[in-house]
Image (cartoon, rainbow, N blue to C red; front, side):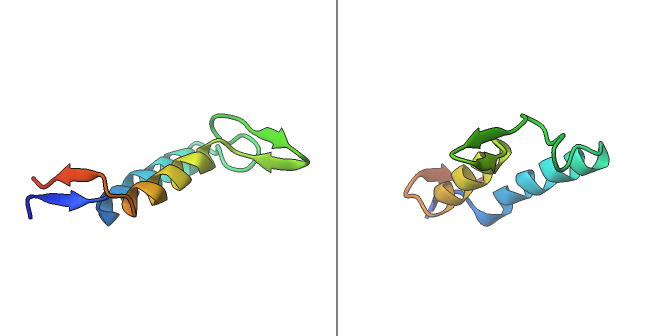
Length: 67
């Protein structure tokens, strides 16, 4: 095959590096980047959506060319 079906697992390393950068700047908890949104009494950090999108792309049928 000349492509990955879904994003390869190592692409999640980008999310780990993003969280590392946030932690190194003391931006965890309430000061987490992109703020927070309260929906129906639940607090949602929009950065969580990056994890949801990344996980969904890993199991998708999107074709990513191999290098």
